[in-house]
Image (tube, rainbow, N blue to C red; front, side):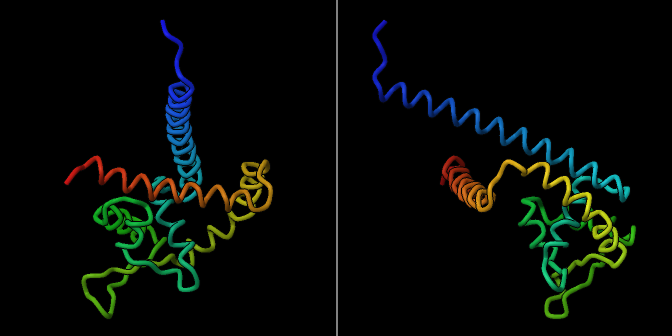
Amino acid sequence: MAPMSGANVFAMRKRDSIRLLGREIASLHASLDELYHSWAKTLGITGPQWKIMLVLADAGEDNELSVGNVSKILNVEASFVTTQSKILEKQGLIQRRTSRRDGRIVNMSLTHRALAHLEGLAPRRDSLNEFIFAEFAPGELDELSGKLFSLKERLKKARLKVAGP
């Protein structure tokens, strides 16, 4: 058997690294889903409903986003967000309002009850985040987030390439 060239060895190592990265990302996703499910249980809701609430909590001052924007952020269908947000509305955790400018758009925001619950959990969540991210120096999380964002954008483009013309 002929020895492999340096380029072939490098290509094999890169392929192995890419596979390992994919497995680690999938494992991180599963772990985050489990964590979200645990936090969601404190309100008697599902993990995906918890994610919707977190997106709304991060919406800024007015704490309001459209169903379409939430679906884009979570990378899910708008119909899924609509269905889940109606359940959250019935539970008194979010408010849904039709946009005054465009009747096709539904805006959502957290209720005072939901905000109070999230505020009550903040110390526990902060403590857990300190534990989870203890190994990261200042700036490293921002750098990692930037690299993951870049990877996500390239994966979107790759998905289009695979789908073909």
